[in-house]
Length: 406
Image (cartoon, rainbow, N blue to C red; front, side, top):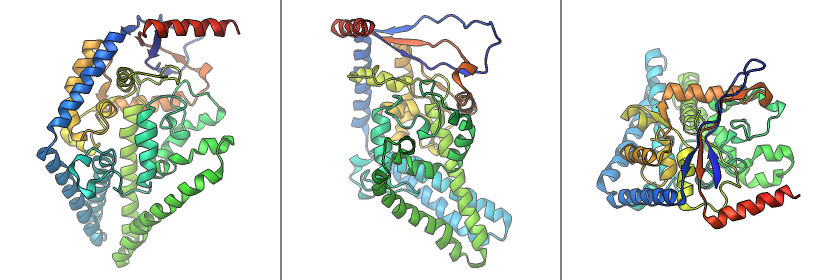
């Protein structure tokens, strides 16, 4: 069998001479448990797909209508920017518009959640969103790389986004002392960080990737970012004439609000305490059931109101999103209780807490993983062991023996 362990929760060092607590008893899932869990989750997905229809179609149309209404309102209020309350209201409306466009519309549409509608404007392969990252590059870095290799260290580049240390299995380097500074910069400039994600900047620095490899990506950045910059920082400010500067500042503020919100929701779904990472060896040749278990252990939810879930693009249900990335996200709240029941049935943790608790947990990790490993202590892991077939166990034993004889 092989172990999948929930991540330790690091904190400042124990006093010299203190000892770590004993390891807790691991949870064990047999091959039969894993396969049956996989079948139950497959059935839940198929049941939901079969029920898609008019309500889902009307839901996304209502969200699009609301998003456009907020944008028109925000742009219009900028013409009253000489009156501070109108400017603040305009920034708020434009911020909501950008959040809805990026999270409940763009992210979800590009996952193919509404391809079944055969609506050209909601086609996942042609949709473009209100952000500087080209949609085709995002679909590769997110839909393929992240959702295929979720939380596999060395494969999923969302772990740290190439600039942060967010997992104990990432080798520490003095560079990571700046972890909190890099995280704050990424939060404020999140759309630009997402845009450059496919460049693999850390591999360029390490010399394992050439700048030539980045040129095709850069051409896409230039085309998309140029349009976004002209729209928000030139065209719309010019349209307000003498209010150019207040409009420019308002547009920039709305972009920052959207960036901070998106960063916070995404990080809270992937990096709070209790979320697990995996090695490539652990996940080699995994079954469908094991893939589901990886999604369950590698994700976290954020509890909140229906409005909060809409504003998060329903990524507050990150567990359900990782299980069913191509199902309409507004269905996740109804799926969540059934997923939680399955977790309880099979003894698996279901990580869900309020926004404040998850944000605090994420930032605690950011600060702690900035420090050298020997400066911090860790609580024992809560292990989930997955049994393999006798042949796989024999192969593991043979491999261990071979390594010991090297």
